[in-house]
Structure formats: structure tokens, C-alpha cells
Image 1: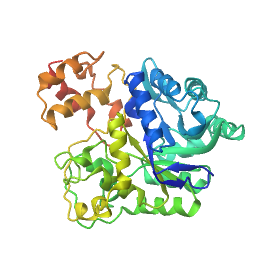
Image 2: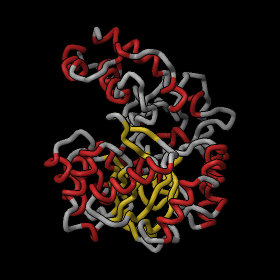
Image 3: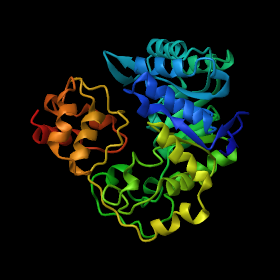
Image 4: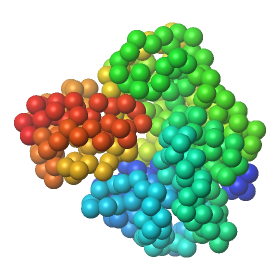
Length: 381
């Protein structure tokens, strides 16, 4: 394992760190085995954005007696309401669920307190002057958080936050598909199937400017979506139309300015082993330049399974529905082999009321209403 200084926070973190999102829904035994294997491999930094109570409790149990050996990136504004993940700026909700995070993780502090999922400049402007921002300041002053962070997918919003001097760490989505998008287009264009020319392979200016600003101001970047939910690993599924390896994706992210850690989602001890093999690979095996030469572009609304689209008034776990649909449409699984899992859900695509609230919240432009209807056609419910 290799380590980097986390900006100007004074912390030193592992280049490959653990994004715990995919541990949600796993057994305690699985959660513990992944965390134990990660720690043995030298991973000392975890991201816990999930608000679901059980996974928080299980991570806390897995870390019992070992809290000082890891640093935790925890989120302020990720809430669990009526059995669903929800993003909230409400002061009382943010307080309750941050204290819940501390209690369930069996700790009295969080190393990086992430202001959770602000993706529009006007949202940032409003948040800066809110009671909840004052609460964040109080947490920092009392050392309940050691550094202030922001999770964001939009470079304009992120740069406003960096320029404000109010954050120490930025959690940002970085991979070649996002960085190399032609400047006249947006992420929504990418996921609506518009014809884009990636042949120049030059970073989108706003994103490049953001990375430079972070580097200049000492704001650390922790990376999410480095594999684009695994789609970059398959030529058929990748928005770039080329297949990359985990090593190439990791090297790409780790060579961006100001990046200090890649929060990689790992669901099994074997995936931890595969990830840390990156450090033993020869340079040519992680060289991403050849893979990106002359890439082409296609996309039809790729779900990143992040569930930022929630809450759903019909109670649908939208990411889970999309995963099962992708298993059939993209991975070629027989519908009947997936149907049992799909039909056991409390709410399925057939329960969608087509309100469109999910599409407004989605940072990746996924046409969720159409996909719920397609899932109903594929699985019959």
C-alpha cells in the first residue's frame, strides 16, 4: 500500500481506500471480512455515506477496538426516513442522523465530515448561510469532525466550494468518461445517447480548472465513481465504448491533480485482494493512454446505482431495480434467473407512479421512469 497526505488536513491516507456503499445489505460476517481484509492490506480510510441503520451498526461492530487504526469519511445530510435513504438539509434531521452515525460506528468523532451531495451552485450558496452550515462549523470547533468536506458531482459547484475556503476535502466523481467529455456537452448529454466526439481526449475545462484549484489551495480530492459503477470494465457497457482494467482506472484517478485517495467499492475479501494488486502491476499494465486513444461514445442512460434519486414515493429501491434490469439487458442473464430476487423486493418497477422526482435528483441523467416500465415488462411486475 502507498499513502498520501490528505491535502492540508494533517492526515495520511491509503491511496486505495474503502467505499463502503456496497456493503449495505450484506451480512455482518461479510462486512467484517471485507473491513478486516482491507485493514490487513493497509487500507486506513473508509467512506460511510449510507444512512441505512444496519450497515452503520455492522461497520461499527467490525471496527470495535480498531477505531484508531482507520480514518472515516462520514456524511452530514444523508438521512433514513420511512425506510428509505434521503438527502436533507433540515437542521434537526442532519443532527439526528449524524449523531446516529457516531453511535452506530461506536465513535465520538468523524475524521472528515462530508456535507452530503450538493450539486448546484445555488444550493451551495444557500447552504453556506444556513443553520446546518453553522452546525457543521460547531462540529469542527468541537472536534467531532476533524476536517470539513463536500461530496459533489458538478465541477462548477465544487469549485465555488473550494474557492470559498470552507472545505478541506472534496469527494468528486472522477473517471475518463467524465473528464474527457466534450466541453459543449454535459453528463446528461452523455447518458441520453447524443453523438459525442471523444477523439481529442482532452480534459473538460471546468473539471480541469477544478483540479488545479484544489491543488493550489491544498483541498484534497477523494474519488468516487472511478469505475463508473463497473461499466468502464466492459466494452459493451462502457460509455466510452472501450474496455479498461481496474488498474488503468485507478491510475487515471490517482494521476489527477489533488487526488489523494480513491474510494473503491469492494464487496468481498477477494475484491480487496484484486484491488491492492494494483501496486504490484508493471507500469504498462496500468497505462490508460492506449485504451483511451480514439475512443468512441455511446450511452443510453447508465445508472450508477448510487440511489441519489431517492426517496421514492412508491418505496422503490431504484438502484436495485436497475441492477437487476442491467443483469438481463447488459450482462445477458436470463430473466428467470434474476426474477426471484427482483420479485422479492417490497416494491418493484411496476409500482412506479411516473412522478419523475427521481429523474430531477439524478446526477447522471438516467431516464428512470422508462427503466421502471421496462423492468415491469421484463419481469412481469
